[in-house]
Image 1 (cartoon, rainbow, N blue to C red):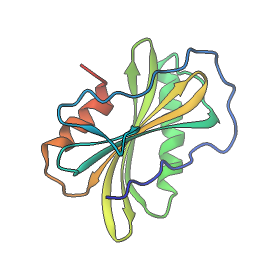
Image 2 (cartoon, rainbow, N blue to C red):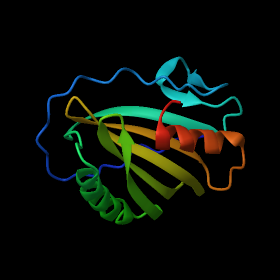
Image 3 (cartoon, helix red, strand yellow):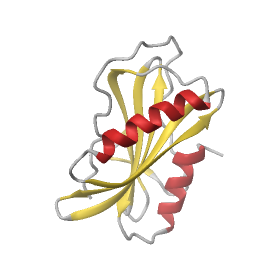
Length: 156
């Protein structure tokens, strides 16, 4: 199942804040394994759901407050909504420890298939890091809810 690359969302560079780099993603979901030995792409046992982590060279300061994350979420929603193959966009701040991130959810059509995407936007040492979960639009596998909960709330 092809996984869409995260969409580019910011036109102008933001000032980077100094923060320690995040460790590589480890998906703590039972039955999920790295795809082809790549620890940046994980699939559930059935192959119905994928999670992809990407680090970008684009500056993104850490969000110290919910209001700062909300401001970014509004801009992100406008940008994603303007993409031709994207629909049903919803964004919201998501607390991650002492900082905030932004969670986006949307439908994406690619190669005649509609996917449900959940995408977390984080600051990693002042640079954009995304963690993207995807499944087919009407996928009913238990992996869908597991994946969305992991992206929404992190590891438990």
